[in-house]
Image (cartoon, rainbow, N blue to C red; front, side, top):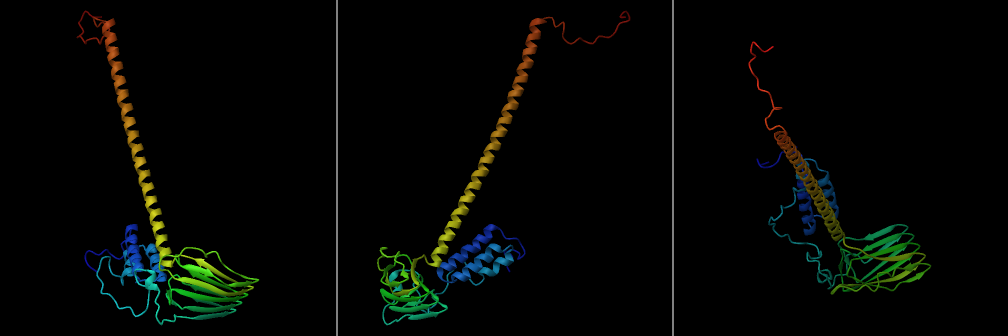
Amino acid sequence: MTDDAPAPDLRASDADRERVAEVLRDALAEGRLDMEEFQERLDATYQARTYGELAPITRDLPAPGATVAPAVSMTKDPAAGGGWADRIVGGDDSGTSTWAVAVMSGFQRKGRWTAPRRFNCLAFWGGGEIDLREANFADREIVVNAVAIMGGIDVIVPPGVEVVVRGVGIMGGFDHREEGVPAEPGAPRVIVTGLAFWGGVGVQRKLPRAERERLREERRREKQALKEERRREHLELKEEQRREHLDSAERHRREHLDSAERHRRELEESRRLHDPLNLHGPRRQHERRPEDG
């Protein structure tokens, strides 16, 4: 520890915790932390009381503005730019997973995975979730063939993706609410088809977790800034009221002194007018003579 470093047992301030949180947000945006790690470290940051508790949270992260040698990616993850062209991998990529089955159980496909051109899934007395918010796409158009028998399957797509629903429901149904939403330029199309028998296939449009967390952090910052602004306005109002009170008290004191001075002068003037010889003024002290009885 250098001489400039604070003592580990020294109490940390809100500003110190906020600086650590900003490093974590940058690390999340750069892909150094996943959402779970980010949330765990963020919770630990706001619970930290001393510098010793804050220091380990960012020990393995670069300082803001530091230059880090680029690492070679060994996985086919979406590019940092997040454009649709980078997420449609094409070629011979058949996808990370092409099918899923849940019989009296459940399945999930979520996170960074490659959705194939056709994904087949079955839920029998069970449930499944196909989350495409952070996924790559094997082609510009993919098909999710969902069969739900006395069960349910949810398909989650990010904003900007076109959704087409062609499934058949028998004493069950497919969710058509996300159909007709215009697609962003270059965005893929997701076709949801299959069968729902005494079950249902739902389609939801949600923001990616990182984007949702970023918006949550922005709202928190806006609320904090608004709270700070209101606190400043309150303090300024109290200071203005205090000054007005002091000014009013000083004004009343001066008015009282002026009134007293005017009253004294009026008395003196009245006395001079009614007693020009000053007969009723203060009597001088004389030495007593013997003949004074």
